[in-house]
Image (cartoon, rainbow, N blue to C red; front, side, top):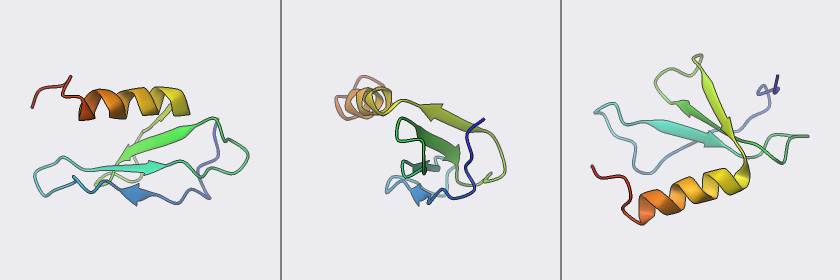
Length: 69
């Protein structure tokens, strides 16, 4: 289990009041190989963890328009 107690979460600049809110923490002490993602409106809820290369690929796919809105 990854210790998220020291995570510094940042909210996506694309978050809005329509339920599209995510926060990301990539500063986890002792776990440089993890990026954590959660719903900013459910901060006590589940957290998705991915590798930094996986996160980079995901963000690149979004920016490249692979996921239509």
